[in-house]
Length: 355
Length: 251
Image 1 (cartoon, rainbow over the protein chains, first blue to last red):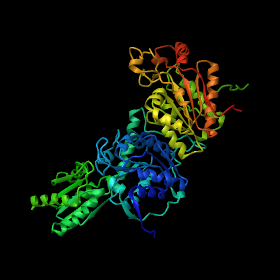
Image 2 (tube, each protein chain N blue to C red; image 1 turned 90 degrees about the vertical axis):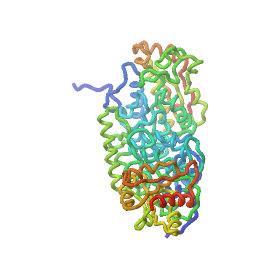
Image 3 (cartoon, one colour; image 1 turned 120 degrees about the vertical axis):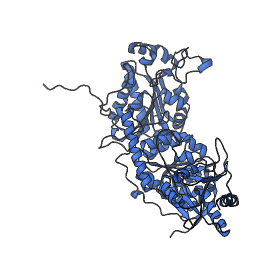
Image 4 (cartoon, helix red, strand yellow; image 1 turned 135 degrees about the horizontal axis):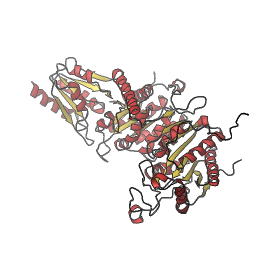
């Protein structure tokens, strides 16, 4: 059993990628994730990997496209404004079905925003972000340990489905230090073989062509139907979520990532005061656990969604609940993180209204 | 007596019919690149990155592994490929809108890093695919669908000289501007393309060949008139020649 070490979230995610067998990183510095870029610049040469600081996030995402098209594990990391710059390339990567991993350590927005933690890139991550009908698989860790675990999973899902995977973290997770147990190093010889489609030179076979492009609408529609078939398969197989104390709960809190961590504290505080409340935490934001949330909410008196945004995931929560009950929302934004006390106050208002 | 083939399609070109207009120089340049790939024996290890523009289909015209980059991003895509597979030969094929407008940052930085890739740069002073709009390389006075009064310095600024800009960058190991308007120029252009690929194979740094090309359709000229216009106008603005050569004489 590996021992636990204290690591900063950003660095932990970098080490997790290295242990997952990633030997290629392209990225551009941006707060609050620069430690990840810096970590890779010193770590990758130690394992005979390649680190390249790109001239921009636009270039970085296209370097990812190029590297991923050779079937090589590759990743980048950035924060909100940088992730916006990558959207064009991510759309191409989704269309070309290239396995790749992105980490967005979200900060306050819109525009230049600030450098404090936020969850206001939920729409961008889960609803496409770039042009066209596509989806990223989106994983939302709520601790540094879970970030490490989900980075590993991200590479495996990217390879399995030939799809870009996004780890949606936030400035809190990126900057915070926690004890972490790292997995063993992945044996590079056990990484998936992509030689049946990847661009590795056409010696002894027909040339491989990789593109998100077909000028014929009937063919392009076929490509799109292929993506959709894959997305349905992902929805059927990859939904992940966690619950806390929901069995006897009369009220349900819903949150993800750092916010869910805080909601865990709220559950304890509320229960100490006799309010029976539980927590539902989506881990995959896409595919979203619609059915699982719907059944978790059954018989509850009220449901409160809390986000570090003005309300983005709450739209999916409402889709899951489908009008069966009122869905309340509380959020702070611009880099302000709601405290357990203020969430508890909101919860009590709902309890008073519902009793 | 059996007929003897004295001229055939290069092996590295596919059987797909070109989509180019009559008199366009893309076809000549494609053939030259394919001949060079054949002669260097690198078909099986060449990866190509096509641009957005008329040559967006180029990835299907070459019988090598190929992809299409987002508009202007081919040098970044090629960088990712080359860093992932350093023993492969990676080239981009880009037009002037792709390379010299939207993709300026990518080409400058790939060149400056001395990225071991090769770029074939087609300069025809106009946007072809979208129907004849102004390019960064459009000549002063030239009328296009977005400079209908003729390009003017006060309004649209000067034509950009890509090779003259890139030659200042230390990472560039081979850089030449050629034309393919006559058989002699075609032969010279092929040598340039070959040297550019050799530069990459020898690991010397970034290589680029700029090819002055015609666009008869969007210039509104016949193929012959287009060649004459290129010779009289484009070569004055963009003089042919070798700008950087760190590879030396080819054997």
